[in-house]
Length: 230
Image (cartoon, rainbow, N blue to C red; front, side):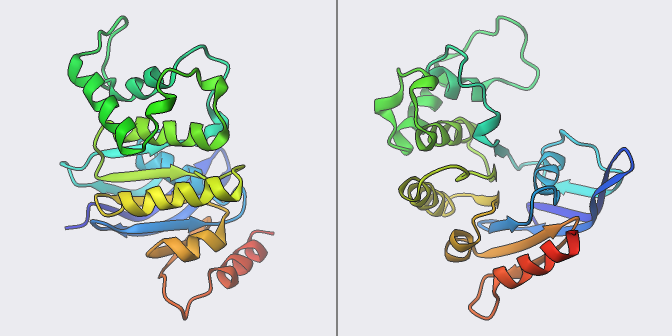
């Protein structure tokens, strides 16, 4: 059984069609890269999977035992908020039905320590988030998602605005994590996607999924989809 299956999914914003008849099957240890132009529905798809957006048509079926971790674009994260790295990661342990003045347990803190060790960011634990570089903040948001011990990890543009070295470091981390979990990532970084993922999907309202083998050129499909969207 697939961990996650999307069937005939369509999403509208007012009268704008964002996703049209999307189908996708996600299995254990898949590493899927989703490419497409701005406004193609990439973020909408991820938010539909985590339940932030309700589709107009179709189904998203998730194995009831599956835990999903989500890493949003770090550009949407308020870096001016006076909070430490440790506390940002700790917030990932909050239950969905938490009450005001929720008190963290020692087990929650142990999960943070484990995630920090896993990503080798111990040296950042007591820093405030406004002191971090883009690459460091991305690792922190990744650690925040890992405290739930997810089966599927969703990432929205995880290397956007990062320099080449920081991008390579993030992709190396994801390759290692893929041995333990399924990864679905949206990105504009076609070259890096080609060299890292197992499958890629071209999305511009509709979607086509391909195994990442040498006979497939994601640039070709991306160009077709850009043309289609104009």
